[in-house]
Amino acid sequence: MMTLYLKRGKEESLRRFHPWIFSGAVHHVDGQPAEGDLVRVVTAEGDFMAIGHWQIGSIAVRVLTFDDEAVDADFWLRRLACALSVRVSTGIAGRADNTTFRLVHGEGDSLPGLVIDVYGRTAVLQAHSVGMHMCRHEIAAALQKLEGLQIDNIFYKSETTLPFKAELGQENGFLVGGDADDVAIENGLRFHIDWLRGQKTGFFVDQRDNRAIVEHYSQGRSVLNMFCYTGGFSVYAMRGGAVKVHSVDSSAKAVELVNANVALNFPNDTRHKAFAEDAFRFLQQMDEAYDLIILDPPAFAKHKDALRNALKGYTRLNQRAFDKIRPGGILFTFSCSQAVSKEQFRTAVFTAAALSRRNVRILHQLHQPADHPINIYHPEGEYLKGLVLYVE
Ligand code: SAH
Image 1 (cartoon, rainbow, N blue to C red):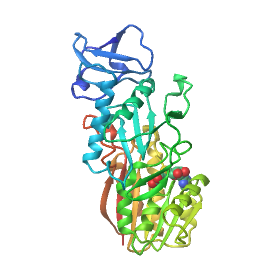
Image 2 (image 1 turned 90 degrees about the vertical axis):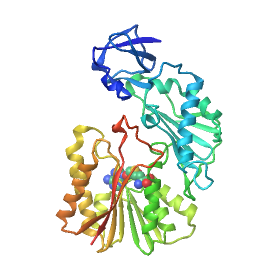
Image 3 (image 1 turned 120 degrees about the vertical axis):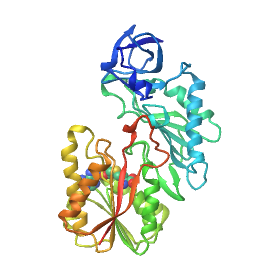
Image 4 (image 1 turned 120 degrees about the horizontal axis):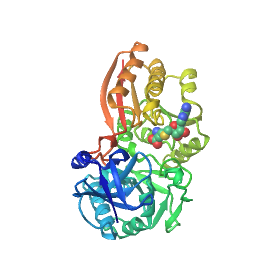
C-alpha cells in the first residue's frame, strides 16, 4: 500500500474523524497510486492517521478506517454485519412485512462511496467511488456471507454514479444470481422494483417513515401526490382511507409504475388516477381542490452554485400548493437537496406561505429514516428534510 503524507497540520479534520481528505491537504504520495487504490495516510511527521481509497478530484481520499488494520474480506464482513445490526435493532430489517431497506448508507455506515439497498432477496449495490467499484466483488462476497440476511441476487448499478472520467466501461448487471422476483414489501405494502431502469436503486427507500405519516392523515381526505415516481405515497394514502388519490409525474414511465403498484395492492380500486404532467403546470391549471398535498420534487440544487435558483423553485412550487389547498388541508413538503439546509428550505416555504396569505402551522418536521443514518463526524450526510403543515 502506498503512503500519503499530509501537509503539516492538515490532520486536524482526521482527528475529528471526518472521512474525507481534500487534495489541498496532501503533501505527496510515495509512489503513484491509481484511482481507487488503497493508501495509508500519515501526518507530516509520519504518524498513522487512516486508510482510504485514493481519488482524482477535490476529495483525494475517502477514509475507510482510522485504525491500522487490513482492508480484507473480514473487514467488509465486519462493516456489513454492523450495518445490518443497526437495521435489525431499529426494527427496520428482520421483518416479514418490511423487506425493503437501505443496508449501507455511505459515510453514515463508515463506508464512503457505497450504497446497498435490499429488496427482499435482492440487493442493489451502487458505487460512488472508483475504490468501491474495485471492491465490488469482495463486497458482494461479504453480503452473501452475512448472517441474518438471505441474499440470492446482487445487482450492480453504478453506470451513472461513478466518475465519468475514470473510463471504467462499467455496466449495470447482476454480480450474483439474476432470477429475481421484482416485488418488495414496505410496511406490508407491495412494490415492483425496477432496479434495471429505475432511478437510484429502483425505489426511494428514504421516504418509508414519512409515507406512514401520510397514511395516518389520509382518512377521508382527497390526496394529491406530486412527483409521485413509483407511487409510494399514493399507495399508503389509499391504505389510510383516502377518498381519492391523484398521482402526478412528468415521466410517462413513472405513471406506468404508479398504476402498476396501485393495482398490485388495490386491484380494481377506482379511487386512484395518475397524470403524466409537469407539476408546476398541473398545480396552476387544476380546478379540483385537495385536502392533502405531497410535494416531493427531485433535488433542485445538486451543487451550491445552484442554490439561489433552487430556493426560488421551492418557493414557487410551495406557493402554488398553498394557493390551491383546501382550508384545513395538510401539506407535506420535502427537499432532498443536500446543498439546501433545513433553515433555507424552511425560509423558502415560509415565504411561499406568506405570499399566498395563508395561516400555516408546522405539525411535524421530517427527515431521513434510521436506515439512512448520519455519521456524527460527517454532517454533510444530512440531506432529506420535510415539513408537515396545517393550512388554515
Ligand atoms: N416521491 C417519490 C420520489 C420522487 S423522485 C417517491 O416517494 O418515490 C422525483 C420525481 O419527480 C421523478 O419521478 C421525476 O420524474 C419527477 N419530476 C421531475 N421533474 C418534474 C416536473 N417538473 N413535474 C413533475 N414531475 C417531475
